[in-house]
Image (cartoon, rainbow, N blue to C red; front, side):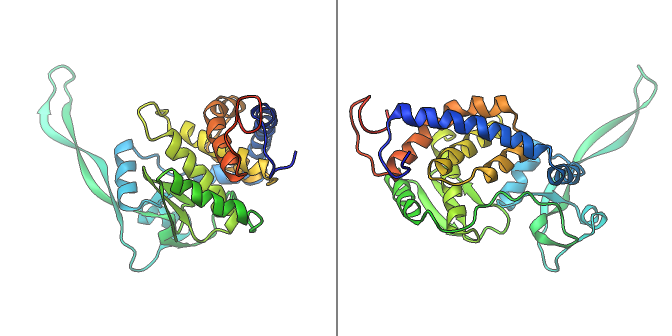
Length: 281
């Protein structure tokens, strides 16, 4: 299929079903790789923060990817850079009240929350850590890049390009930020991903689980990238990082497909047409 030509809805649907199956198989293969297992082992040593603390972290450092305390980083061979400002979260502390529980005969304890300091990976330096490479290189899709910027304007979504120092992109409800440190193709892939978040997850019907939202957004990006001839390994790696299974990917396809179709339609400058004729149905 000519990736720049107009395509009918049935043609694109048939193409995408094959993409989704291949993506599921590739994601599973990556999860079995030695590199991925090493990354999982490293990440598994990090504390899982509560929802409230996650919000505190994101409010203070939106680009945060992996946080730990000063001594925790030190144990992993990394050190907080001089002058870095800590991220403050709340840690539970128990204390004895001096009151004996008549039912158990033990002294009662109460809990309070004390502020503690943590630091993001980007605020540290030292030993290398395992990385998952899900960036795309090159500038082969420059025409699609500029057309995608036009789509953001058409949808009244503010698009900014800033150095993010860790995160590749952010969707903030009517505003998307893309990391300038990525190659053009990498930035475009992030635009697809964050556009999907804007279209699918800024309403009351969005999935509650963040991982499901990430599945839907990345599968949208993978469908469009594959349509324009780009290898989907980066997307498979990203999905593996979110522990996506084959059924997760197939379930997310139903939400991803309409957004991917909208993007492809715009990027190929297709005109609206009657169902069953030219254009994406």
